[in-house]
Length: 173
Image (cartoon, rainbow, N blue to C red; front, side, top):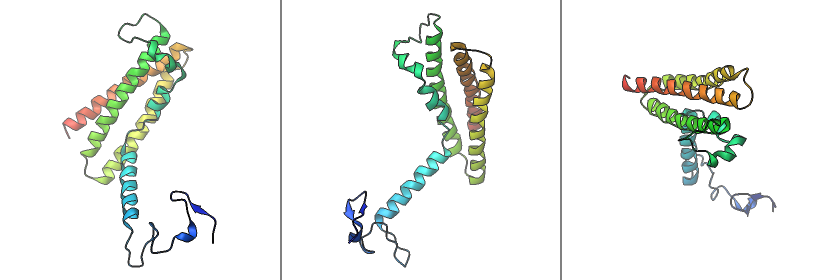
């Protein structure tokens, strides 16, 4: 008897036979219900993730070390504090980035042609990289809080312009 275990069931591997394995494919092409369910779920998940907006910038910016002090900031009444301005720009970027993601998915769902849809997704990923590069160029030469403020301001501005573009495409498609 083999002492190895299947991690999700904690039963010895020798317990599994062709007839009771959840991942068994019969010779006639039949699949177990569990396998069909898992395969369907994975395909849906991969399609949604593959078509979704790139969240890497929002995730990276949201987890910046200065956001630990975000609870102390009142973005409705800025007092000229650069750290507070940086935190508020971070919140603003997170907001416009989530709006962008929603608009992008709405636009993508209206497109029926899969090859065009794939091209648009590739373009969006390239656009995200371009947004990051342009914002880095905008903040070049600044130091400290001003570098982050310049970077975030550029990210917010460029993201708003892309939202306007997507809204136009949705409206006049």
